[in-house]
Image 1 (cartoon, rainbow, N blue to C red):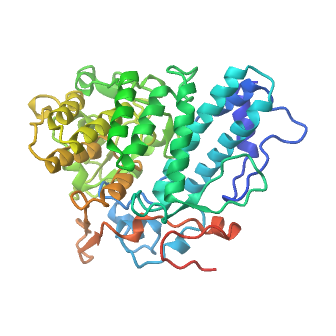
Image 2: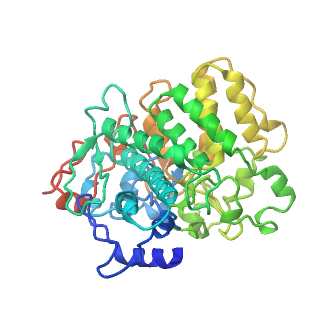
Amino acid sequence: MTLKTIMAAFATLVVFTACDKYLDITPKGSQLVRTTQDYYDLVAYPNRGYPVNNFQYLVDDQYLKESNVIGLTPNINTINFLFQEQEDRVSQLNSSSFYNQCYKYIAQWNMIISLVDESPGDSQLKTLAKAEAKMFRAFDYFHLINVYAKAYDASTAAQDGGVCIMDKYDLEAKPVKSTVQQVYDFIQKDIDDAIPHLQEKPTNPYHPSLAFAYALKAKVHLFKREIAEAQAAAEKAMQLNGQLIDLVQYEKLGGPSKTPIIAENNPEVLSYMYINGYSEMNFGYSYMLSPELTSMFDKEDKRFSLFYTKTNASFLDIGAGASYYNVRYTAFFFPTVGLKTPEIYLMLAECYARQDQYAKAISLLNSLRKTRIEGDKAILPVPTTRKEAMDLVINERRRELPIGYHRFFDLKRLNLEKEYAKTLVRVFPIVNKTVEQKTYTLAPNSRMYIIPFPLDAMKLNPNLRLNTDEAVPF
């Protein structure tokens, strides 16, 4: 049984409907998923997608062409882009690809965890399959909780509404909504249960490596502000895989047009996930960088000069100062979601900055920046305050982790701390002179940072209701 055959069968048989039910993914009379090897192969799910369209523009890093806003009937993109908190966004979300995808994957991981022990095959492979499935289940719940609930706050997490936890393959399950604390506890238990059984070098890159596991562990601790634990996990991840692409040297070799780096050859990738699919960056103009983020790149920064443009009038409002990704996916695989090695450097630098070890924090940032920026601009001086050090880390995260959900998650978690909270400001339009220019703002405590559950899921599960005070139309 090949992985391709199993995945083709799975894709045609799974139709996720809501967080209160699964469909049977092993059809009657079939042995598509029968042996332990079949279950293990099922962990490696190529082309996993995490669409960000429900919250893509609730950040200061992404932008919309003016013709995609002006004169249009309000939609979820324009409501988010203009920070229109009082608009009815609930009715805009009849369904959600992000929500459905996450729970579809969770259904798959639960099937493996629940059923692999009954399959014929090697006991060690069963243990490995369960461990890998738990790692990916933790990954999916981490994303669900950071989209649909408040950011983790230790003082309120036990009361804050979270998401539905489904921890087993149970077709009759009727889950209730767990709290933020319960979901984080579940995530951390899955990670800690899995790590002792994972491999440093899995059989193929679609299986989770030990470096991926420690990087995710570090991220979960960091989002909970458990800094010592985050540092220890990040250091372990760095020991396992701290590879970086030297973009300065890469440009001298001709860059993507001369030396393609496809997905499987990108050493920085820790997990192969996408927004929509492996070819998504062929349509990079759909993921436009804001004028603010565009202006944060020095001209010596190869992260911008190799991959972005701000001169194409077909996809940009020339003069607005925005930019977009301009390299085919076959020339360079640019990971937009998931985890990659530069984030390990950034998480570890943040841990050091939060513990007032400024020289260590900046040394890590400079190690990363020297592979991105040519010349003296790569070297940052050591600051003298925690706020200065943290600002350097936060800004580097913006330059290094654009387009996906990273900035949205960072804004949510940092907005809980007054030193790093940010009121987003968007002046719009910039180029069009026939429409009045206005200033739009988004407060750090805005309910817009908590995305409503899709209506179809709430209709099917009466236990599932919003984590905001917005009205549900039924």
